[in-house]
Image (cartoon, rainbow, N blue to C red; front, top):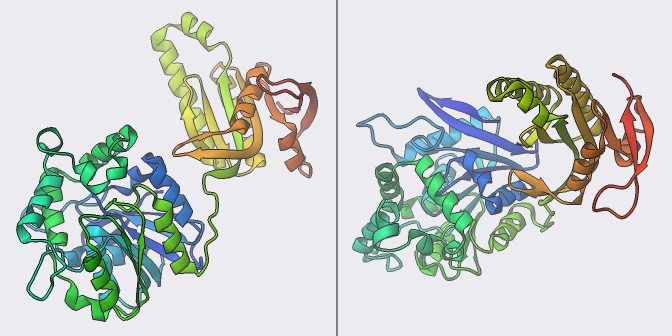
Amino acid sequence: MIRYAQHGDVHVAYEVRGQRAGAPRDLLLVSDGFIPFDAMDELPALGRILRRFTTFGRLILFDRRGIGLSDPFPPGAPPSLDDWVEDAVAVLDAVGSTNAAVIGSVETATIAMLLAATHPDRVDGLVLLNVAARAVHADDYPHGHPLELVESLIEYTTSVDTADATGDPVELVAPSAAGDPVFRRWWERTGRAGASPSVARAFLRLAVLADLRAVLPAIHCPVLVVRREDDPLVTSGMARYVADHVRRGSYVEVPGADNLWFAGPADAVVDEIERFLTGELQRVDVDRALATIMFTDIVGSTELLNELGDERWRVTLDAHDDLVRRQLARFGGQEVKATGDGFLVTFTGPARAIHCAEAIRTGAAQLGLELRIGLHVGEIDLRGKDIGGANVHVAARVAAIADPGDILVTGAVQQVLAGHRLGLEPHGARLLRGFPDPWPLYRRTSR
């Protein structure tokens, strides 16, 4: 759920995922690349990483002011790194976090380092990915790039004409994803939503041209520096300098050439983060979860469309969709997708699912609609905002063979609810299309 923390007159958008307050660890992610946090799950690989973070901590996401859902900077009032640090503190205050591990990468690593140095009582661990305390070469800092090159790279990666005229920014920051059309569409879409080219250029200059070398000795918490070993933008000298000049730094290189930390073989990066923050590596499978799956379907929808006509059917269908969503909010159902004349929904438990199905059936009858509803309990594959796996197909087949007005559930649902009095009567064993053995089914008896 998206919420807002307030710092002065500025509203900073944030979201908390995973364990509740009091979890062993809070994780504050300062995302790079001007990516609004509400768009992160649209990239399946990144959504999977975020789910993995929640297996060992409470994940706190936020948009810096000027980006995504947070307030913009007023005209004529350019941002500062201190502003973004205070945004992070406001979010930590809003979620009741007294100590957090902070994760920053590339340009947002500067914010993470400043936060740890200026608010040492709020940061108990720091993870810096593909980080440099200074990107530009100096007489006393041979690790940096020439200023002209850094300036040209900033221009190159934020120009609206670059991809068509002079090169490919994706190839530069995420070469492993350059041939992935899904990544490319997501990157272009989220980049436009996060910041305009001129805003992105100004913000990138602010972070990349900063020199934080003097800040490093003031960072007292443990620090993990992770670098992709073939990253052409952040050299090993840059990253090692950070690890060597904080009080309690450690340095790790992982395979890959992606400057964007969640592109490519990101499990190796997250492995190092989990090991650093927890002392062990569990590698929980975050792509599967146990869920109650519900399919709903309007009986005779094509006939009703022909009878009512397009306009009246659209009004009826809108009323049906509104009814379903209100009941999902009431009973804690998670809409996966609308199917045209029905819904695919998941619940954390079958009792709530059955009560929700009953309420939806009753409301639909008041609209003059009959529904078929099928429920099943089992593990599902998490595929971004979608779900998959054999158990999803089971629930779909159960809904398809239900009689008009019926709520039909599998024996798996009945077994989980054996101690509940929910009015489930045996409905025989039926073959479900695509499955070799009959499935015992139960019917909801109360009407």
